[in-house]
Structure formats: C-alpha cells, structure tokens
Image 1: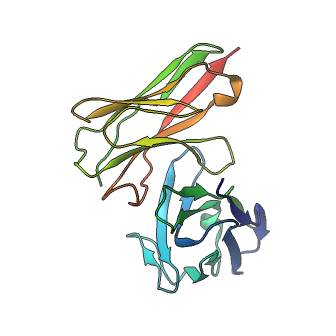
Image 2 (image 1 turned 30 degrees about the vertical axis):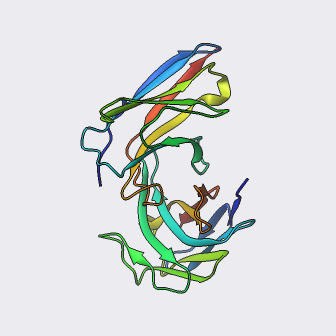
Length: 116
Length: 111
C-alpha cells in the first residue's frame, strides 16, 4: 500500500532556530500534500495544503512566514518552522493524496517538535 | 465544512463487536464519510470510507443511514490493538476533498 515517510520523527531545537520537516511519498505521486499540527490531547488541525509546483494554501490563523512549505516535486514536501518558540512545540503530521485518482490519503508517522 | 459529532469515549470488551456512532446532520450530497484512527504518537491510519452504500473491508464495516445524517463504524471483534482515537470525517466536494478532523472517539478495549 501507499507509504508516506516523515522525517525526523522527533527533534529538539533551541528558541530562535529553524527546523525543517520532510514528508515523502515513497511509492506514489502526491500531487497534494497536507500539513497538520496536533497539541496534546487535541485533534489534528489542518495548517496548510500544498500542490506540487504551487504556493501552499494556509488555513486561517496560520502564519505563512513562520511555517514555510515547499512542494517542489511530486514526492517531497517540506515544512520549515522558522524562528521557533516554545509555543511551536507540537506534533506535526503530513498527509499525501494520491494523484492518480484513486482513493488516497496516507499519513506520515508524525514529527514531535520540542522547542527549548 | 460539514461537521461531525462523536461520543468522546467508548469502552469495549476484547473479542466483542464495537459500534462507533457518528452524526453528520449537515452532510451534503457530495460529502464522503471517512473513518481514520490514531494511536498515541502516530499518524492517523485509514479505516474505511463511503458515500451512500454500506461498505466492508478487512478492518471494519461502515453502515450509513438512509438519509446519510449518521453513520456507524463497526469493528466486528475488538482486539487490544484496536484501542485508539477514531475520527469520523466528512470531505467536502467528493472523496478528494480536504480532511478536517473533529474530536474523535477514544476507544478503550478491556481484556
């Protein structure tokens, strides 16, 4: 079945630094990828939707200059948290949609970001 | 986006069937019903999806009400590995619409 690899699985960074999270579709072409954020004991919150080769569409309240999304190829999307602060600590999850038309929302295993 | 309502939590005994309800009274004609589940510190896992007819797969069954305002996810024999948060989600505009997660139901399975 479809597999989405998300890396790293966890990361600790200092306040003010930037962190990049990668999301790769391993065996299918993902024309659309989604980025979610999940705080403890809460549900997933959609942050942005990215289509290959286009600028990402951000949900209301999500700062596009802080959460930079790049979807330069059909198999790779990256989320960069710039100038991270402790309140950005969260579980970040990507999802990729199969572009061949079949049903396909495959989620990555998530990245636990801790900003100290 | 149409919203869903699920119980916050449910309990089940191992080896018994589990019926997880979901209300979606504002569903539109093109909204698909998706079910995902999430284990702690993991990404969501696909369970099943459907539009109007009941659906079966190796993991579960999805029973959709005739008026489509509610649906039920059925796990035929719960195992300890089925303990997770189950999300009922409507995708706007067909099966390819964005998935907006609600609060989900936390299922506990007792041995």
